[in-house]
Amino acid sequence: MIVCHCGVVSSRDIAEALGAGAASVSEVCRRTGAAQNCGTCVFSVRQVVCQHEATQPIADEEPLSAAS
Image (tube, rainbow, N blue to C red; front, side):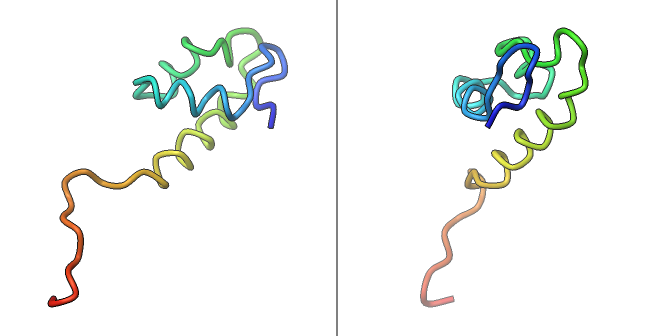
């Protein structure tokens, strides 16, 4: 899905930027070129970033065991 029409940035481009180490919406925008012209897509970029973060496992948590 195209998230930024001005920069032709897709949700896949955003996911790749996050996978490559981008840690914030502004960093994703810098890496992908999203929200660099009109900026109306910044809320959509943020939504994709939040959805991506929600699907990532939390590193500090230990897996639940069957004995718990």
